[in-house]
Length: 334
Image 1: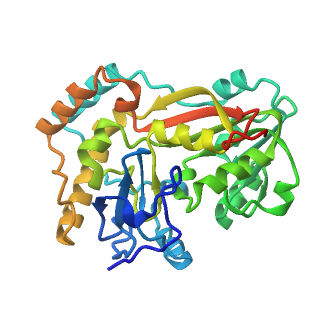
Image 2 (image 1 turned 90 degrees about the vertical axis):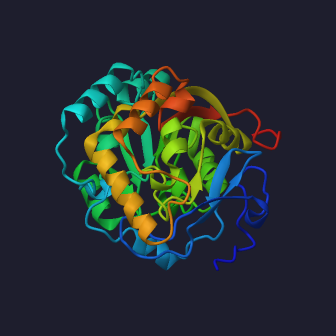
């Protein structure tokens, strides 16, 4: 039994994990095939956020990223399957109703036009930062993976080893006009600490963009245990737009803009085949008790429910652009 550590709690209200509602149980890492002891998840209904009951050890975290195919490694883990006519029609229908807006360089620079010093925490190989190059902007990154740091450095990024929770000293001594953190916060054992670190890095008037998977999306609600967006044990916390907003405000940010994206891809043949592979693997290990496999009929129903749904129910990712508030999250002057 994976007894919870006493310091693991809801990042918003502080309720201890063992006092929260049981949610999902993931007995095996579906990407490595290894059994995991931290796969019991709980949900805080008051704050709309999920978390592990037991925090993974440093060795468990390291082992969870030891795989040949993962999106951060530049290789897809999705099976190579051919879409039939029905699958192609499904994707076309999803595309016709997709009004999502991905964050990109133009959008960021519209909100922060004077940004000259830009930091990406969890920058990977520097792909996003590379789109922001030019006009005298200096590009900086923080990244724990040594191979990814080499790729970022080759793109002209001044990159240092570290994480959102452990900012390297040479980075912490600087201030930035724009800080980015895309699909990082859900990996953090202490997301509040990560956000406070970001706030300390912002220059006066600086902007911050944070993006996470959106657990209030109907796709996630339907296929939670087998959803690609769950990604246990690499993901430690599980947010909705509401809980991300509350957490950021609690840690000293004022929200300026919100974007959502990630709809059509859920109906892609490769994505559907992968999640059905996850279903079979979990079933073999006693999991997927609450989730059905994907089928054409079930996905047509999902498409009908999502076609004109509100953004927080339709899209699998939510991103918030913010600035440091005049007062911090406790109501004290910032």
